[in-house]
Amino acid sequence: MQELISFLPLAVLIAVFYFLVFRPQQQQRKKHAAMVESLKRGDKIVTNGGFVCEVIKQDDRFILVELGDTQVRLAKEFVAYKVDEMVEQDDSNADSKEEKESKSKHDKK
Image 1 (cartoon, rainbow, N blue to C red):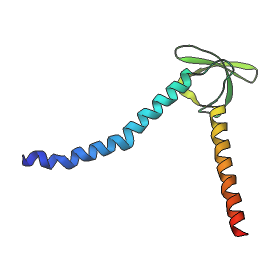
Image 2: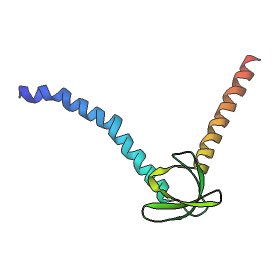
Image 3: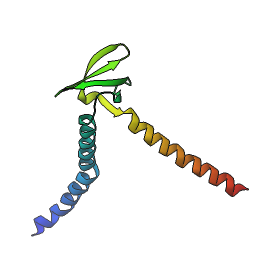
């Protein structure tokens, strides 16, 4: 019984580590995979290298994108995000920032 109690702190530490590190990574990976699978023709994406491309078509492992006048095959792992998703997040952040600034100006008067 004493040996089991001595392993209890280790088990708690492993559980905390799992819920703080591994689980969020798994959820983020699933969310990214769903976003990549939902890409369709005409969507604008940003690659991990910073290139803004337009999706032409998608197969199992690669996405055919248009980069300027050139069509390029891109591995799905290198899609960072969809452009419209980041624009929506930036807009909501800008709106909340403007509200805070207007409140602080109003409070100073």
